[in-house]
Amino acid sequence: MSTVDPRPADTAARLPHRLPDGSVLELGTATAAYQIEGAVDVDGRGPSVWDTFTARPGTIKDASSGATACDSYHRHLEDADLVAGLGVRWYRFSIAWPRIQPEGRGRVETRGLDHYDRVVDALLERRIVPTATLYHWDLPQALEDEGGWLVRSTAEAFADYAEVVADRLADRVGVWATHNEPWCTAYLGHSAGVFAPGRREGGGAHRAVHHLNLSHALAAERIRAAHAVDVGTVLNLAPVWPERPEAEPLAERIDALRNRVWLDPLVDGEYGESVLAVAPELADAELVRPGDLELVQGSADWLGVNYYTPTRPDLVVPGRPPHPEGAAYPGVGDFDLVVREPRTDIGWEVVADGLEELLVETHRRTGLPILVTENGAACADAERVDGVVQDDDRIDYLRGHLAATHRARAAGADVRAYVVWTLLDNFEWAEGYTKTFGLVHIDPADQTRTPKASYRWLAQVARGEVTP
View 1 (cartoon, helix red, strand yellow):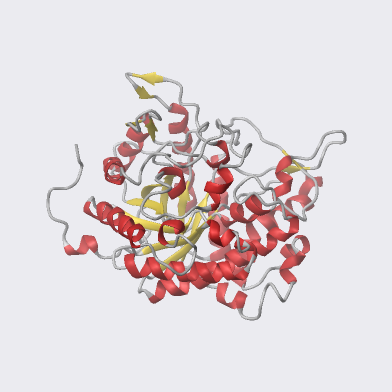
View 2 (cartoon, rainbow, N blue to C red):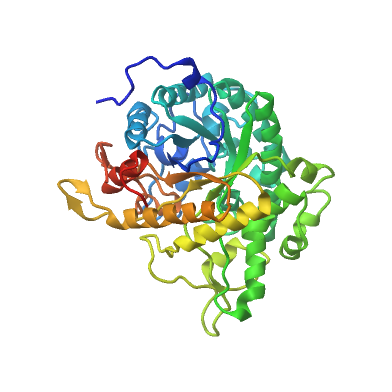
């Protein structure tokens, strides 16, 4: 049964919403296009780097892809009902660039724009605030064939794409994110090679960093020109805690590539000394051209923070190989990572205090309004009670991190929303379908959606019936 309010939507409900004012912590949930939409060859969509990457043997744990995913392209009304049933105010979704410009530039596929028109209208009809992310890693393959994020022309093409989307949707979408977790695109995709496009460029990945930073600034200008006023970017920042005092210099180098390489340009308009020490490529005047960093500085109206776990670097123990994640930090050198208990099903340490520290420090560093744009847990989800997943471990995780967010607000951090990752069990990138983060179980046989206990708990929190 639909949860749509039978009353006609009033005019105010259809006007673009602004950032929450911070008087209360607002709740939401999030998804990403390639992880849920499926329909990769429908209505003129072009191939993305993830279509290409998943077709390569050995890249995905279960040899799967997002070709079908949750079939949300055809089931977006059902999914909008699920968001409405939660009673949360915000829904963060991403737009698939290959649906809008199949070749990455030039020709616009209006059927793709029409789809996101329908998504936005469905959310507004249910009194849900649509928050659009322009890039959640699905670069058109045609642009990758020309060099992808390693070349400046991709940043310029991204600005053109942003303009096309904003011209269509900015009359109803007021809160925009340009990028989701550019660290993953740059370093997992171009240095470690474990995410699309699967490149192993080493220090060459720093070229992607700058083009991602520049593309955010260029796109933000275009979105504002379409009369949107709240434009931000989403970063997977992490507290970096050295496991012992001897590892503190190592932690400084890791922090430079995990956090400062994004925050320094946004706040100070430069790549600071600590960044250049591990990424000397960013001192190249052919790469970082005059005026680039001035464009990036101050280009965000708000900052999204995605948090799952801290990073605990340690020195490599003699006789033991360095941690494989070191490939994602070119220029840092060999290191080990310590992961303490308890852990989620994906092996990430659970430390809610890390989110509190991160929010307080990020607000101090940037002065920007902050949205927790992703936080959640991969859980095994084995137990069923009356046919429903009784995911008490996920509830415990969310309860602890939501409480940490409230503590950060009490400590003075301007945190305005807490958005749970994710609405649906979906294609979890290199993990395929082996890890589940969703509030809603998806039956892979017929795509039936079944809310879990965590969904019901979050709905109670949204209604004020329970407190974290």
